[in-house]
Image 1 (cartoon, rainbow, N blue to C red):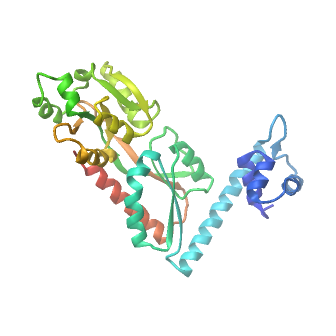
Image 2 (image 1 turned 90 degrees about the vertical axis):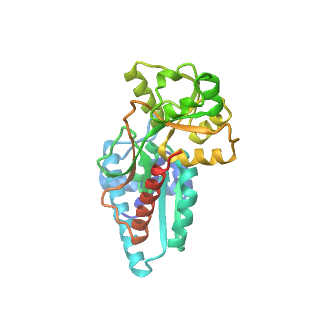
Image 3 (image 1 turned 30 degrees about the vertical axis):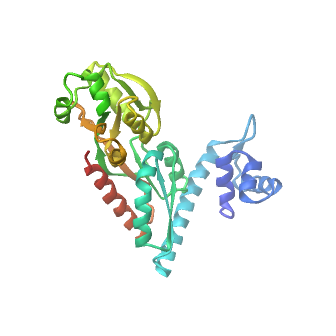
Length: 319
């Protein structure tokens, strides 16, 4: 049953014999024969054939068990490799797209200096998708935020907590607070009352993203509303739109360095301002997520510490 168990795992993932066979570099006939022999050995039907290929309950049980065997095998390989060399290996890190662009370049540079013979492979995807890859032994670590779904098979370690800030350009403040500019900047630096910004246009993250959920929940509790005219999934794009005086936006703590970069090239009389939001106490936790029982060689443990230090450094940055 354990011989070529990766055939079953690939088939369970693809739910298509031709596609799975192609990825395994074997023939359709070979994979079909493997499945028939496996079901004969188990004495159980592992896949429903109609209307399309789908795991039976027995197949799901076998999938979970073989994934655990795969994890143990990966742990063994890493442990033996560490004993042999200690400095050679691969770490597969999942990180959301927005954080990837601001976080990864510096992380790669520092990590390569520490472990020149270790490959750090970064994957960008929504957190929910990366957690599935983590459970399927396709990732070692995931850096992400709250998704509303917690798996009992994963360890979640909070490494930082982000605040959410209002981002608005000087020109937008001049336009919507003509009688209070620039004095209003000092007032808002102590906490911006969003009810005063109800007429200002806003661009924000799409529904379901953490920053959007935080602001929507806050507005609902405050019985307030904002004029959101544009939605996007890239925080850095939203900040560039604010720099063009298109609309105000929001920023989680980790994206503040990006705003500083924008300000370096912006006119002195039209800088982006970052204000805390009055009354908003909710934090956005950042988790480092891994499989329970996962073996980490020294180079992965050092990566975890480096990620922790970098996250905390980003959190401490203020405009």
